[in-house]
Length: 251
Image (cartoon, rainbow, N blue to C red):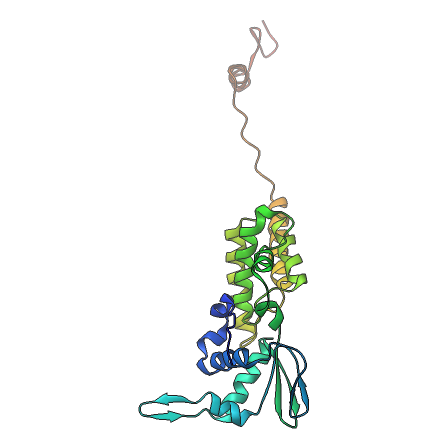
């Protein structure tokens, strides 16, 4: 088999980057996947972005050298890696008589874009292009914490755009995302926030509470500055002197 494939840079932010077997398996599937529709294998139609292989054969494919010998991968380890790729929404599987049919999600999107379309797809469609750098920072952190897939969903894009319209400093948004994710992980071990609407809701609720708290505070009135006439009047009242030279109503 000749040719080449493309690898998305966001793989570096995905947790499979730190899982050697899972990363090698995904790379293998990319390399072996059909680049055209209608390929027949043992009577089964394999389309673009698909590959059919048994777990035992994959274990042989992923064997590696150790010292002077080679070490194979257990089928149970292959199964765990396949499940991780499915959970990360990177592949789909279907059992057949000839083995498992693997379908790489978004294969066409990442493997067959020409350079002009790649430039267009790299430009994020946000309400205000001035928001693009901030949008990208929020998007990257969200995908990193979500730990699956490479792109936000349309609803995620809308939620990020709505939050940017609130004119909240980007540093504050990113800091809140860190705090929200940390608290969520503490309360839900092993789970991730799958929708940016969750971050949006928590941040907006926090802002509303702060605004309500500020509006309920009544500021102390500033002390009135005493004028010279006020001082004379205060002195006259203290000593029983009527202004104009009268005292106690007598001349």
